[in-house]
Length: 65
Image 1 (tube, rainbow, N blue to C red):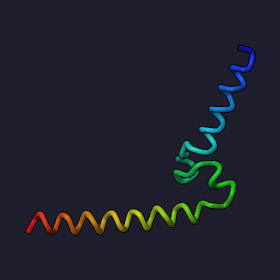
Image 2: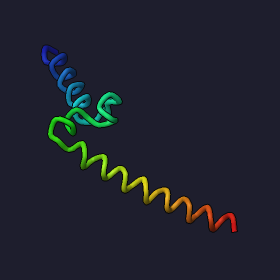
Image 3: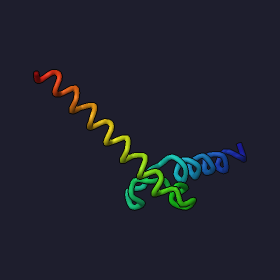
Image 4: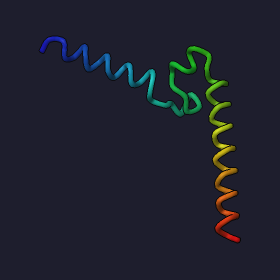
């Protein structure tokens, strides 16, 4: 299997750059930062978090009442 190392290395690099969030990059992928999508991604996360908190508060209010 002469191409096994190259195949495994390519899979690792792809995962590392496109899927693995980096704490030092603000929990973003290197690709997201490189292509200037950091603000957009963080904005989307903020919206999702706000909606989730709102839903949890609503559900908590219904079960507490």
